[in-house]
Image 1 (tube, rainbow, N blue to C red):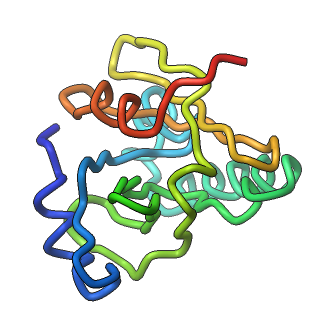
Image 2 (cartoon, rainbow, N blue to C red):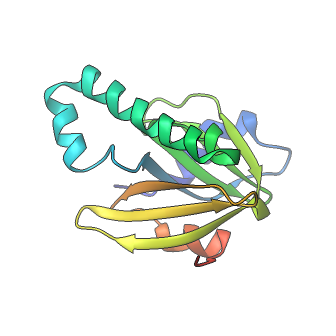
Image 3 (spheres, rainbow, N blue to C red):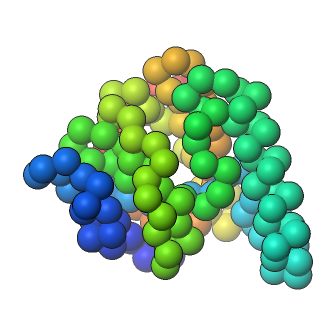
Length: 152
């Protein structure tokens, strides 16, 4: 997976504030919708994709708080100088951002390696959190450094 930071800056420039640019961006998928689940999605893409996204949405809503508004589909997590912008994307087609939070309201609680990538736990200022799966080859260490690591 390539570094999508420049692509995110270009695709989202109309949604950024004046002078705002992407410092680091990663493609993320809600936990449980990548890896083995992704193989099942290849066989039955529409049915499986909807079911997995539905489960991810249910987890986010059950968590409450800021987590309840996070996308339940593949998305880009983009850190700028002031905000964390979240926009649904598969890396090729980019939708409008669905969430934009002040940078200080989002921290990384865990970043653990997996066979096919990493698992990233984000925690929000209100105490809620979400888990994303990240494919290999992305600037996860830069992302963690930009947001800050707060183990829980």
